[in-house]
Length: 392
Image 1: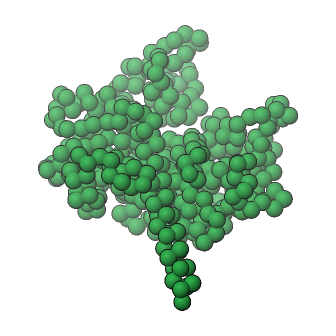
Image 2: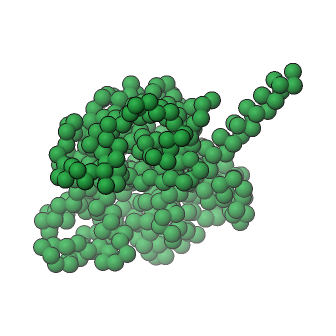
């Protein structure tokens, strides 16, 4: 095994969250891409290298795993400003979309190109050879359908190249990405790991370890409800649904445009309106602060009712459940609506993470714990084998 760097990447439907190395680097990129040309116009090109690469990701991606190979993309914040930006559609499979891979490769290339990593990866002229041990995940539904196997083999089977075009600081660099190992975890199991264990997989929440728990992970395109029993996910009872917040965010975006004439670039802009600390559910219309509470409450309450119905159905089939944790970006958006419904209806024992950042980064943190543990054990095994050979 080469000098591979640990990467834990959650390609969420709203944004990608990545943790690298010994947790010294974290990357958060909106999950938006847009096809582009090689020479994008830049005002003040001489100032380009003073900008943050995250704000100007402009790349060509070459990988035999892609359906459309060798294509140029704007990614993240830069893509959100484009007229032809693309976000994942409801009903799509994360494991089968080019966009998932483009986001993943872009994040790894950004990490590999960092000045601080010059000592880790081999550089020859403008080409970086970067090896990673990757921990990532897929929705429970896709794992239950066996899609994780194909996803993992597609990543492992090839070298994937990201070429930085008009990107701050990294323009002209090419990064060859190779995976020494890939672990694909079910998202519900990952959430459980994060709830009960620290980064060394020591138990930190003894009250939860032997409880029967539901974890309802509300994402952009899907919802997973993991059933935890005897310290593991009950695969037969765990359920995944094609119901996330993305479709509702699009409806809110369209109604704001229709009613107020305000164009929002992406779903991410809608999320910021819904979650900002001050002036939540308000926008600026021709310079005037304007409430969109009426639009937001009607649409999100309807979605919360559907999510609550799923909770009720799964709880009825697992009647000895003691608590349900709501996690994920969608849970943050729907928290108040779900709490109100629960207080007025069944009164289940439910809980949310009050720290929004903890909820948003939960999957990436869990993948990091799991892949770091795998890497430690793998090194110990290799050292043990080498010692046996020496003794012989």
